[in-house]
Amino acid sequence: GTFAAAVVAVGASMAFPSTIQFKDAAPAQGAPGRIGEVLMALVQSAFDNPVRALMNANYIGILAWALAMGMALRHASESTRTVMQDLGQAITRVIQGVIRLAPLGIFGLVAGTFAQSGLEKLLDYAHLLAVLLGCMLFVALVVNPLIVWTQTRRNPYPLVLTCLRESAVTAFFTRSSAANIPVNLALAQRLGLDEDTYSVSIPLGATINMAGAAVTISVLSLAAAHTLGIEVDLLTAILLCVVSAVCACGASGVAGGSLLLIPLACSLFGISNDLAMQVVGVGFVIGVIQDSAETALNSSTDVIFTAAACEAAGRREAVAA
Image (cartoon, rainbow, N blue to C red; front, side, top):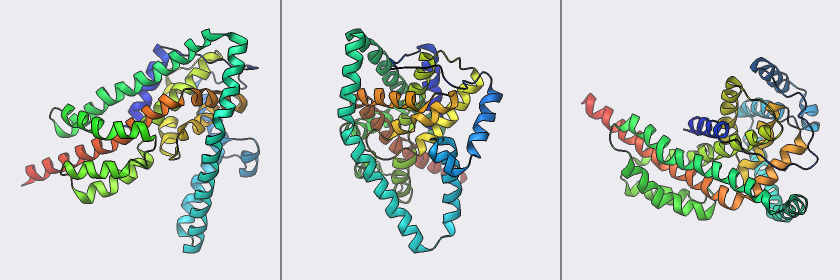
């Protein structure tokens, strides 16, 4: 589901390219021309020295070393795991503090853009927001029902609309998948789903089932590429879908968490960190609507897929009997 959302976002961005007003924009360094160059750069970044990766904000290298350390720490003692868990919670609190201060910086970015370009630049923001919301609506009303139909072989829309009404509306206003877990658990119980299934899938889905985040990362990254005149071929677009889906699974459970992974996707196109962070700033500008819709899609999809899986399991048991 997350990968399909990324595919929809990349296709919409190709069909309706968006642009972003960059300040002091320079041509992308090492912009890829062929998929081979992108893959080679990806491999070289993944095997970078960990200290140099941190110093140079090499997000691919940081992610690769984080995965390696995570697998190695599976065999760590309980006290070490407790320390790492506390460290993760501390980092999350720091991120939450930065996000709370973000409106001040956003105000400066927007004020500077209006002073230089006038109110007509609002049209760029409106176009970008329309592409984002259009992709999320398409995923919610077309892609997700199609996935449900492949598992249940019946009309998926009663289930989809019920989940959108009872889960997505609440998530839209809370802007937190984690905060919407109790709502989803109660909805799964009312739907009569298997408790052994939804007690695992709902909390897990709130962490890694992030179709809306994949849409956001893909659309904003390609908007930056289009603004800088970087040509994106089909194979590179497919690679971006994979990276966006993986990044979405690692998005932090805070408001605007997916925006912090945009520099990782932008690095595929050789876009500097300074410009990538300007893209993040644009994301925060439209974040009130974008993040609300993103969370609504993420959270409601958890119940939709859980219900589809439970019904598919029931059908298989009935056939076997």
